[in-house]
Image (cartoon, rainbow, N blue to C red; front, side, top):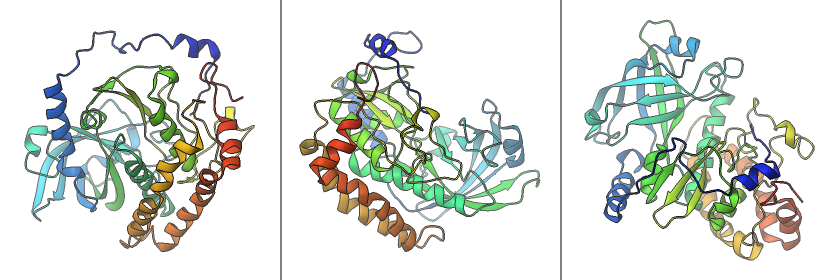
Length: 372
């Protein structure tokens, strides 16, 4: 959940970024940046938005019961490759996450798939090693399937706004238990691009740090990310403590704070999502918008709003196009609801007074972390 920042902590974080391990970082050469970026960009898994159908056969019931995120369970993954052939490969699976891994919150945990990289050559998973699989939090309720689609579309929206974002691939997964202790069932989920691959594709390195002063982040990108989170009504993130945020350093030495994990946003509006207690004096429900970005000279409607407004038509076309694909839990009515949810956001971007009142007046001071 969101944590506020004290003035002393933020001032202390102005120190140079140091790797969490304390080891010296060796940066790639220009040639290595190029080679890695080209390989990551061409990853077959993310060349299509078509649903990838696959069957995960492993000890599903053990994963659901134990929720041990340090133990991998052997199994197989069967999927239909791009040429229509059926492929069966070994895969190790383990649970992951914090909130959704807790049994009190979800009866089915999110998973991580660990592939034998060399064996995946020539398949849709070529070049992949470890991938997060987002699953329905409750495998027995249809409305939880909607949450998966909504969060998937949040990632797709950010992809439209900036290439510095995690790519995703929708999957239809049939879960088969090797001990027959779990009833076979099929659910939609999505795979998230590996953080190292995302960084490489962005001609950047992934930085493992625990805290970071927001003043050191590239300002234009930081503003865009904050406005995107405001757009989807997401307050469950922190670019200071890296809560649902990853830090990358580009080849030209810009620090970008890349967001992920949007299921606590108002766009998804999951029944299990709550507002952090530190913000409940401002908002009471997750579908209420509250700007949580920092105050910067770049936070001006004249420069910050146009890139998002210019992307509006593409975003709306993507959402309507997804609804037209015929998924049972996301149809034209769901698309209409989502587009109506965004109407208030577009109005704020289009109006000087609303932008000042809802965005600039609510931004957080770069030195103290507080709202003026």
